[in-house]
Image (tube, rainbow, N blue to C red; front, side):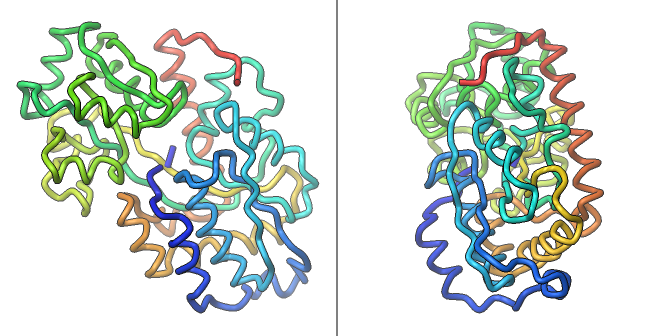
Length: 334
């Protein structure tokens, strides 16, 4: 769905020191915003979603000439924050940022109190990037095709780590199992950090992780990298082939982030935020920050609210099919 944003406090301080543009014309024309805005992030402070959220709030706050305060509403796989945002007054003074787990939620959880398919107005897609398929360094394979053959031969004797049900690493593992047609031994962790530690130690065989976390270990040769899960190579990992080049194009999964407001928010507010997000993702300093984390801004043709809505429909369908085909039983959001 769109993690690994290091040094959030330092990054935020740097962003605050930079001169941002004045409020967009569309916002000024409507007199919006006239007071402080709350931006809900559905995960803990200091994590990748929080870091992105704070970069966005700093930048857009400068554009609007108003303070945007990040409120971390963590828990239940991001669904508590989603509920808080969905039930806010739709006046433009509560906004919401989330990654791809928003579109996985209906396929994962049986007890959602709000339906993300109908609860929000999409304001704009922010950034996107692939995962990296990794193994312990002692595994006897060197290419992705060899790895797939090894996984097929080992079946559930091969282990893969993941950071909880619904996480990006979990979904990537599901895509891998769907491609090879076998079920692996899935080992849960509290995050991909501990999973990476065990991969380096040889305690698990495989991990599908984001480039930010993977790059240092790949550079140190403590793990093996087989491919990125997209059709293009990553500039930060030029030596690692794309899934197409590696011969397994079906191993495709990208992470992404986007911004929302509650259903019924005025269109003028959505237009103002969309314009501001466009300036955010084209700022050279932000583009560099994205590149450092293995992501890129969505292309211009995908930045409108309408394109965002179409993308969401595709993602909801993707997760429904992925988890439905796997026979996954819906869980209680905790």
